[in-house]
Image (cartoon, rainbow, N blue to C red):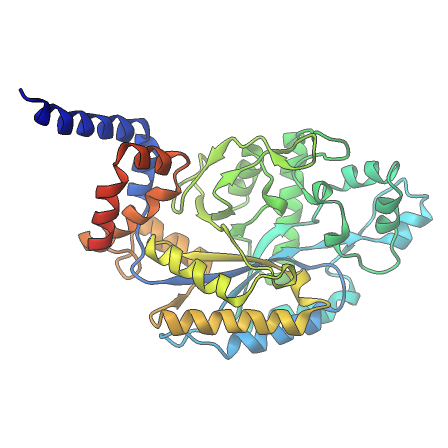
Length: 397
């Protein structure tokens, strides 16, 4: 056998080594369903209990979303990650800051906020999701206030407070982050908390929650089990599960990674939300359109994460940026569909042919577009030359 034959055989063998080394993430992306249509969902967190100016922001958002329709005539959708409680500052102050009291969303002060949310739901532009009873773990917040004057001032505010003003690590609900690194919560406490917040959700919406998204994307298997027992069907994730706050306060302890349609041990379906659009941080409308293009090439839905803070002080600018981004997305992708996460999860789970691609070439093209995101695979494919045939295959498709 000549050297000219050995060389291509050696290259192919090297490629096989790379493919075998990355077999698990490659197969996971191969199995992940491919969508037939471009799909866009605007996911917005932190709504509910909090500053009363939300009512005006919600009504302006609803009006803007209602003006934008996809090819089927459906209006643009925004999910609302619902929070049902903030601290009752005057009561906490009256008790010397030693006992926590919550101000629930059912308080008459929030009547206009609740009315604006329900109006948007009736108009088909808002879809509520469970974010948490509170955007913090109350005992941890109370403990932190004993040594942090700024937290104590926030906790005893005379007006409904904005949780965005808390230190980031204290905004995590499902860990005790009073000191860092955080400590896990007792499973019984988690069960009781999930039961209570699901009751709060049902009281407002006359239905049990079916979609959950953890505050700051820090949660645990114990939280998932409690969600499943409460009837949660779908969990919104960033593609990984962080279980703690590390010594620096950053999310850590990642113990699971997931793709769209993956199933939790408890049976719930995962969806991935990994695109950020925060106009108050300088994100331009083009960011939204570019993200949609990338996810569409991958055969995935584009779940955009944004927060209510965008629609407070800089409300007009943020509304305009979001509207421009949505209109540009529709201009570039006329077949774009707006869909609620629960509908999307069910379509993926049931392999609904109205939503899931069945033709071989679109599925292969999407799968080829996904492989570059695998950590270290792109570098290995580049240095071994495997990227060349993969890129050519993708371009032809």
